[in-house]
Image (cartoon, rainbow, N blue to C red; front, side, top):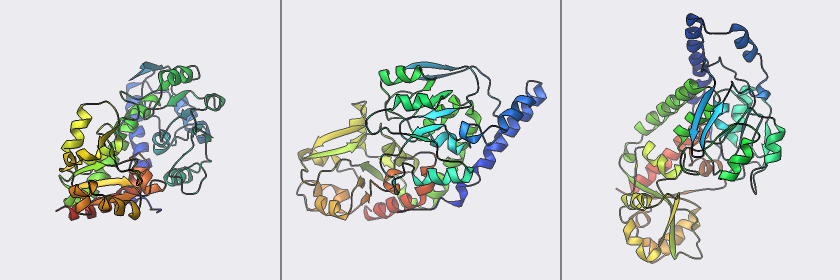
Length: 362
């Protein structure tokens, strides 16, 4: 499935520029602005990571706190690199083209290493595709170093201490705040934009996306309060376990953005672990009696298998057919893990599918 982004998502670049203009005018009024520096930044090449909008006026050096400590960024980064999943979407959404970014290793509909919403944003910015880092096995540190970045963004990532230390030898690194792969989309934007010296623009982006979510949710009142869980790694040949994302995973967090709730049974497991996934024996499936909607990766054959299983078919969501089966290799399935550019790209379609399932649970 390839979906067009809602029209409401398009004007954001103008709002970023407006934020920058307000801050720039404020700086001029205080006598601290440097017009020559602003002109130089505005004239910079987008391929080198310069902003299409005005400077935010954020003062340097800045410090960004994260799971591995505190990163100090001495001056405004001109060359921005990103590693791990989707961090490049933050600078792109703010009009900044990274010098290098991780190639998409799933959900890529045409095999070019760039997801469709990223392709659209690059086209809108009139920019070439940045250097793509192959992270099939691990981070390609040499390739990252070759892009000569001033900062490396990884607020949503699974960096290890060793990864962080190695990347820090190349440039200052913005890592995840607490849990690997547990950074929600707001903190992803907040930390990465802060690392670029564009904190105000990041806040404006968050506000813009929240507005789009609110508008979409208002059109689907059946979502309100519906309890959900996200099944993962369903092996149709072995249904002896129930594997699911906990409340530490961004896919599950997103339910609450959409007016739904994380099922209490899932939340209970979440409270007992710091892992983003959990596993329960199928013989204990009755603990998920409070789940009204299930989201998972698969097709109709997977749904049929769940409905035919003597244990899993006892789950109310399965019994009622309240299952959203997403193509995990396509854009919609990929974007169920919300990121700044993917979110508006699939928001309406995803909400429609969830609302259809929620209606079956009533």
